[in-house]
Amino acid sequence: MMPIRKCLGFSGWLLYAAAIPVFAQEKPVLPPVVPLAQTQAAPESESVTDGDADVVIRRTSGRFRLQAANTDWANLLREHIAEFSGSSESQNVTPGLIRRLRQDISGILATEGYFSPQIEFRNLDDVGTTANSNSANANVAEKVIEVVVDAGQRTGIENVTLTFQGAFADALAADDAIAKQRRIGLIEDWGLGVGQFFRESDWRDAKTQLTETLRSDVYAAARITDSAANVDADNYRADLQVEVDSGPPFFLGELRVTGLQRYPQWLLDRYQPPVRGEAYSRSRLLEFQRNLQNSPYFGTVAVSIDPDPEKAAAVPVEVNLIERKARDLSFGVGYSSNTGFRGEIAYRDRDILEKAWDLRSAIRIEQKRQLGYADIYLPPHDNKLDSFGVIMDRQDVSGVKSLRNAVGIKRTNTHGHIEQRLALKLIRERKEVEGEDDSVSKALVASVGWTWRDVDNAFAPRRGEIYQLDLDVSEKALLSDQRFIRSYGKYQRWIPVGRTDSVILRAEAGQVFSPKNEGIPEDYLFRTGGSSTVRGYAYQSLGVQHPTAVTGGRVMGVASAEYVHWLNSTWGVASFVDAGDAADSWKKFSLHKSLGVGGRYHTPAGPIALDLAYGLQTRKARLDFSIAIAF
Image (cartoon, rainbow, N blue to C red):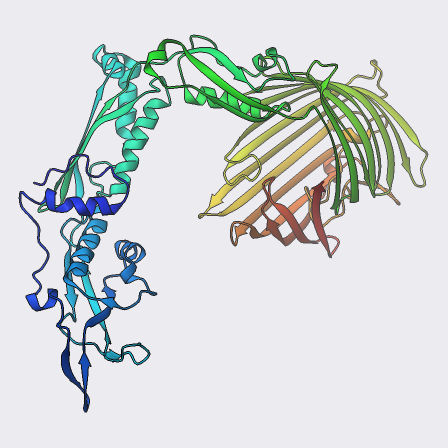
C-alpha cells in the first residue's frame, strides 16, 4: 500500500511526477529494465556501415515517437509532452532526457489513475537511420526512438469516507432531520464514487463540489481540513478520505448598497431583497441579483457576502450597482415577410416625475402597419408589475384596412414558473373592407391570462415547455357594441435530440363565443398565416374569406412540428410541417397545410429564421423571414 496524502489536489501533473519516488519508498514499482547501453550517452563518435559507405556519427541525435493505443491517455501524452508532438525537432539523447521522459509519462498517467505503466525506449543503441544532409554538421545522423507505453490496469475507487466537523456535525449529532437529509444528499452527490476509476481531475472536482454545495446554503465558510487518496498500486485500488469543517451557520444582516445615486433606496425593496435574520442561501442572493439585473434601472448588479466566520451571526449583504441612463433615444430598421420593411424611433425615460416610473414609447412605420404607443410601468411591488398606456395602430393586411385606438391598464403577477395577467382596455376600431360598408366598433374588454413557462433558456430553448391560456370578456351594456367571450390557448414544447438538435412542437386553438361578428374588433377575432403561425401562407390570409379581403373568424386552430439541426454553434438548418386555419365556425374550418425547410442563425436574442414553405392548398412556395436591427 502506498499512502498518498493530499498529493492529488495539486494543479498540474509535473508536481505529481516529482513526488512519485517518495510515494514508492515502501514498495517501489519500477519500469522495465533497459540495458545499460540504452540509457548511457552515445560515444562522441561511432562508425557504422550504411550500404557501401561508412557514416561517422560524432554525437547521437534523434526524435521520439510514441507507440501506444489510440486512447485518451495517449492523447494526453501527445498533448503535454513536447517530444511527442508532430512538430518536435531532433535533439541530443542523454540519460537525463530519458529519465525526465519516464517521469513525465508516469506523472501524466498517474493523474488518470494508471500507477503501474510499462515504458520501453527502443532504438537507443541503433545508430540513426537517416543522414541529415541539410544540417550544418553533415556527420550528425537523425534517428527515431520509439517509446512504447502500456498504461496497465486502471485504479478504481474501493472506499470513500466523508467526515464532517463544525456546526453541521453538531446538527447531525443532535439528530436534526434537515441536517441528516442534507448529509445523505452530499454523499449521493459525491462525484467520485465507489466503482469509478480514479482521476486526479475528478478527485479535485469532487472535493470542490462538496465544499461548494455546503457553502451554497447556510455554511458559507465551509472548507476541507484534510483529504487523502490512499492508492494501492499493486492491487489497482484507492481509498478516498475527506474531512470537511462546515464552520458556523450564516445569517443575513443589513444591506450595504453602493452605486445608488439617481434612484431612492426604497426602489430596491420592490425587488424582494433578503431580510435581516434570514438564513444565508446563495440561490436567494442570486435571485435578488437577477431581479435587480432584469429591472429597467440597473445595468450591472453584484450581490455577495464576506464569508468571515466572525460575521456569521449577521453578515452584511453587499449590493454593488451601476445605474442605467435615465433617458435614451434609439432608432431601428428591419424587415418582415409579414408586414414589410420597418423603421422605428423609440424613446425611454426611466424616471418620470422622479418617481422611478418607466416610460416606454415608440413610433414604428411598416409597409403594411403603422403604430405609435406610450406605456408607463410603475415600480413593482410584491411580484406585481402595474402599467397603463395608449396605442394607435393602423393596418392594411389581406384587404382589410383598420385603425385602432386604445387605452388600458394592466397588472402582471409572477410566481415561480407562472405569470398571471389582468388587464382592462377600452378600444375603438374603424374597419374598411373593399366593396363593403365601413364599420366602427367599440369594446370595453376585461382580460385575464396565465402563462406557465419552464425552459432551459428563455431566448433559445432546447428543453422545456410553455402553456398559455387567455380569456377576454366584453359586455354590451358596458361601453361595448357586442357581447363576447374570447378564449385562446397555446402549448409549445422543445425536445432535445442528441447534443445540439431539437424537435419543436406547437399547438394553438381559440374560439369567440358571440352571436355574431359585428361589433367585435378585429383584435379579438382570429386570422392566421405567416412566419409565426402557418408558414407558406401570407400574413393573416387564413380567415373568413370575402371577395376582396380576409376578415377575422370566431374559431382558430394551428399545429406545427419542426426539427432543427445545428451545423455549429452559429448556423443551423430546419425542416417543418405546419397546418391551421381560422373560420367563422368549426363546420367551416379546413386545415391548410404546408411543409418546408429553413436556415437558422444563432444570436444572443435567439435564432433568426429564414424559411421556405410550400402551401399544399395554394401550391405555391413562400419565403418567411424577419429581422430587426437597432442602432
